[in-house]
Image (cartoon, rainbow, N blue to C red):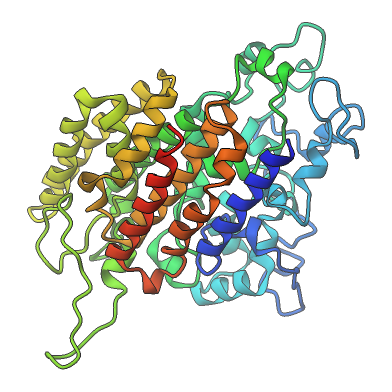
Length: 474
């Protein structure tokens, strides 16, 4: 167990090193900064202060207090016989990423959050409209509780009173309204609402919000799940939930669902267009955020050709970080579908040079391929050999030459780390053997630590070195 937690914190440290300057909503779990709520706060006592003024609750939402009994999830010691029973303590943990969700609304009140609100010209009501959809639980009675239990597990009125009684089971809880987070596709949809973008009020992270100072969006389902774990996967968990969680499956399904969500939102005219401009949050940040040179003097073209994007030079490319990962997984787990997905991805990029109608049609075709892959992955076991093969696929020439932009490169490092950790969790690789490769993995993380200093060719070498070292475990 000690080795597992050591590996987790090494992953957290590496993750923090990458995203410290620009982490998305998950910055709450890594910033660890003290709260600064002064008289100058835009969110005054008559709006939505940290004390938690009432908002209209969602029907069936019971609130954190309903889970906090000392015989339920409110113990101070993890000595429960079925579940730990200190889940509320871990949810509120100030010094750990596991407490991130409880601090989610607090970051809106901190100096950075206040500065973003001022730049956007938002008052307290505007903050609730634009921010509470992700930084608090929609419909909860107190925004001060941040992202509470029911934001992920579902409104509890239907199952709260019976989920701990004799004869209770996970399947019965789900039938009574509990969100089935054991299913990767369900969990991905819940997490994507805030950690990518959703369609509900206050859940779409537009470019204007990022321009005001909000961190960029980045999401990897298994890694974020690991950082937020509030439970132990012991024998009882395996019996109740039908087995241990499969990190490799979670990662692959998460990539497919992220592609689906991106294309779903892009296909909506209200989301894809901002006035006469395209909604730039769908496009690769670093394709535009580069240094500008006038004339030939000192010109330094940093763009690298990307065979996955058949676009003209100067055309902002769609952010395809999850598409690249999805293709790498499909080549191994669903090789019969990989070529069709790749062709549709290229057709989607190419359609952007034609028109909106053609692009939406191509997006829908690509989304269908991603949906089919998500279902294939959800039913796959992800064997030891397959997992090694996926890592090889990520670092292969066919996939590696698509790591021309920072976002895709970051996804690839998180993927390799997640897949190796998943094999350790499944007993396919020993923890000591995986720990011995930490230096090589951290070198790959170092190659994407600075988004402004990202060098595609150097990164490919670092990633390839890490995967070659991991390959020795086969």
